[in-house]
Length: 183
Image (cartoon, rainbow, N blue to C red; front, side, top):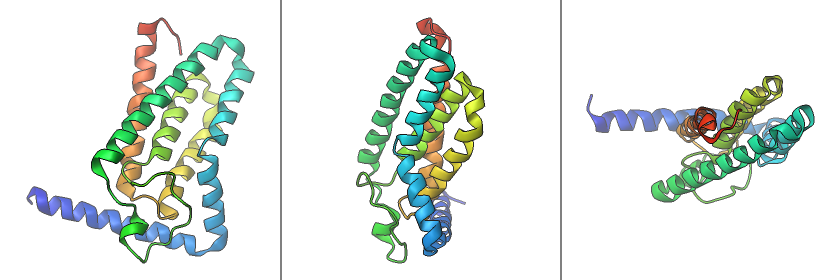
């Protein structure tokens, strides 16, 4: 199989996955649930998790939380660079059968910034305070699903967003000792 055929097969699977998940949004309850998850994934849930770490650990973790905010900025720079470089249209913009369930925050699809940040924060805060993983892991999965169910992203956008988020989180955890910080 040559590279062009592989690309076509991947894009075909990407579209099929997107269509299948977006079909779930035909139920108003499902659509409302995932719209709420998506909006909470914009920040409110993560701010609550940051406050939880502060409440459980006190100011001892204040510097680590600031470091996490800096890492979030790095994640934002990476995903904005990729979005502007790839300019991949969102699924609902290309395929009329895909129902838009939520207004996008920006123009392009690749990668999913919501998923990138959800994975990054979950791994990093989970490393600092493992008890929070009970809430963060299921929520992160729901955020990733919401992006596809609402017609905003293809599965590959979400997968790559998750990979970037995991990479940034791993770098934070591995590089923290270099900055004389214990996460």
